[in-house]
Amino acid sequence: MSEDGKQKISESLSQNSTAGRQDNTHWCCNINPGTEALTRTRQTTYAVQRHSRTKCGYSDCGLFGWSSCTKWCDNYWTELQYGVETYLAYQDRLCPAANLVCCAGYITVINHCFTYEEVMNNKDILEIIVAMGIPINPTMG
Image 1 (cartoon, one colour):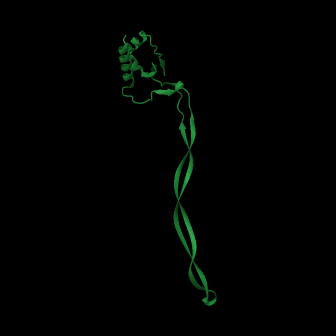
Image 2 (image 1 turned 120 degrees about the vertical axis):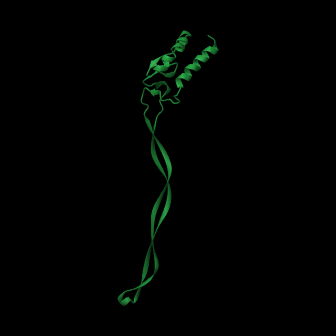
Image 3 (image 1 turned 180 degrees about the vertical axis):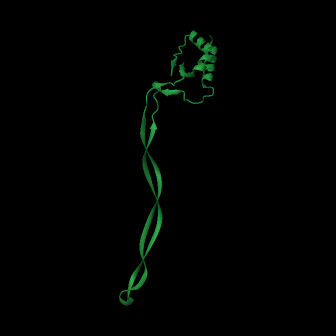
C-alpha cells in the first residue's frame, strides 16, 4: 500500500476516535499519582480599629468645684492595613506517561483510546493495518 494510503487510513482512524469528544476523559491512570501541597502567597487587606485619648479641655472639679481637672476625649477610627499571607494549596500530580491507560469501556489501538463501537465500525481499517504489519496492541480498559 502507498504511503498516501497509509496516511489516509491513519487520518480516518484518528478522526473517528475524536468525533464528538474533544477532551482526554477517556484516558485514566493505572496508579494513584497522589497530590502535593504547594505553598502560595496572597496579598491581604484588613481593617484595624484604632483608639486615642486626647486632652480636650478642663472641667470644674474638687471641693465646691474650685479646682479644674483635665477633660479627656476618646477618638476611634478604622485603618486599613496590608499584608502577605502564606497558605497551602493542594494540586493533583500528573500521571506519568508510562501509567496512562484507556479508561473502562475503551480499547487502546495504536496508542489511541477507542470505544468498542468505534473499533467495530472501523474493523475493516484495523484489518488493513494489521495486514500491513503495523502492531495495533489492543488492550481493554
